[in-house]
Image (cartoon, rainbow, N blue to C red; front, side):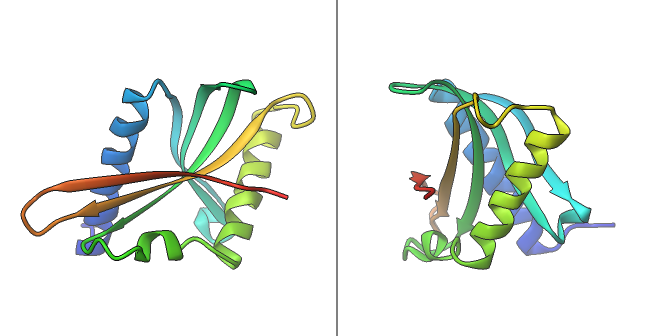
Length: 130
């Protein structure tokens, strides 16, 4: 089945985010991890990255791609989307037998903005959990 324009844009953005994170020293473990076909949650990127204060940290990354640099990508990750994102993170840890009590975990977002002129702007955020 062929991808829609929105799906192609999302896949392109996820690839840009993966390259961006790799250049920052992230080790990508998995992409597009889904629970129940994505209905209950999805992780765009799962990676390991050495954080200054936490050391080796398991990172769950949500990627949002937009054509306009208007902040809409950042606003798209909230409420129910964050709940599903965190649920998918817990499911991943259970499936991989990762001890969440002794493993530093960070939820993050990468916003990818593609300009009409082909330019790319990437913003990277750590999502506070509490």
